[in-house]
Length: 477
Image 1: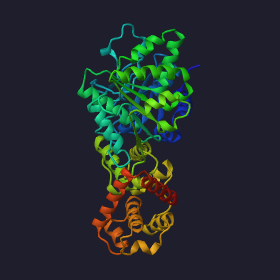
Image 2: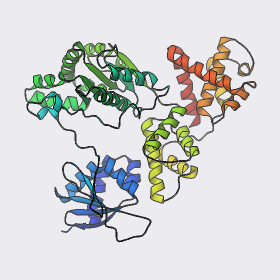
Image 3: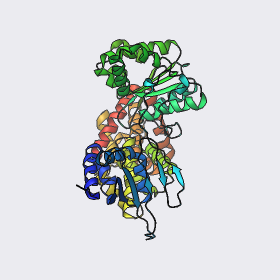
C-alpha cells in the first residue's frame, strides 16, 4: 500500500513524541506540516528560516532515524520554508540524510556545510590507534568565553581556568565539578578541554560520559580485552569524565577507573570529573575511589542569581545575533529560578513563538510563553516581606533593622536583607537604601559586597543566606 505524506509524518511524530520533551515537541514539531512524498523523499513545511536552522542543529539525527524507519535507508527529507514575499517559484530548501555529513542546497545550487552532532565515534575499535588519532569528543561551543562567571560559579570557573593553563601541574587534580541539573557542569568541564587543546595541540584530551565508559568497559570485558581498554585510557593527558555518580551501579568498571586514575595521576596527567553531588555524598562508589576524588579540588555550581541570569541571556543573544527589549530580558531572568538550561530554553521558546506568529517580541508575548513553559512568580516580593523573613530567621526585632546601630547581628541582618532585596525585587538601589532609614545606594552596594565576601569565607553564613534565598523563592511561587 502506498504511504501518504500525512501517514509517514504521523508515524514519525508518534516516535518523536516519546523521545522529545512535551514542551519542545509542541514548539518544534507540532507546527510542521507534511506537504508531499515522492518515492523516498518526504517534503515538510516549516514556518521560517529560523525554524529550519533550529531543527537542523538540534534534531537532524532524530529526524533522519525516524524517517529511515518509515521509508528505508534511502529516505531523504526536504524542507519548504514559508516566506513573507509570497514568491511561490522558490524551490524548497532540501537536506540529504546520508549516514554522515549533511549539506543544504539552495536554488542557485551553492552548498553550505552544516554543523551537526554526528554519532560519537568509538575510538577503541580502531586497530593500531595512535595518540594523534584520538578524537577529544569536545563540543567547540563550550568555552570559557561562553561560560558566564558569577557568584554562583566563580570558584569552579577560575579553578577550571587554572587547570586549563597548567593541566596536571596544579593541586587541583582531580578537579571535581558538582551541582544540579542544567547548571553548566558539562560546559565548564569541556571548556577546560577546549582551552587545553587550543594552548597545547600536542596534548591528548578526551571527554567521555560515565555511561559510555561503562558500556565500553563491558564490551571489552566480553571480548577479554580489558587490558587494551585500560591501556587506551592511560594514553590520555587530560581525561574528562562526566556524571561519575552513575558508577555507583558498575562495580567492575570502578576497578578499571581506579587503575586508570592511579596511572594518570602518578604520571602528572589531569583528571576532571563532574557529578550531581559532592564526593562525600556519592553512594555506591568505592571508598578508595572517593578518597582519590578528594585529593584535588571539589567546586560546586549553584543556581545563578538575577544579575548572572541577565548576563547569560545577553551573551546568548549577542552570540546568536538577536535583539530583545530590556524589559523582556529582565522578566525572563526574574521569573525563571531553576537552572541555566531552562533559562536558555525559555529564550529559544520565545524566539520560536515570535517566528511562528510573525510578531515582535514584547512583554505580553514573554508572559504568555513563560506561563506555558515554566512556573512563574504569582506574587510580587517586596522589601518589607524579605525584611520580615530575615528578622524571623535571626530572631531580631523588625524595627531594629531601620535604626542606626553598630550591633553585629543587626548590621548583618540588614546587609542580608539588602542583598536579597537587590536579587528578588525590582527596586532600585536608591529605593532599597531609602527603605532602611534613608541610606544611600552606596550603602546597599557595600552591603551586597559584604554578604558575597562572607559567603565565600564563612560556610555557616553561606548556609544561612542560601536557606533564606529558598524561603524567598518559595514565597514568590
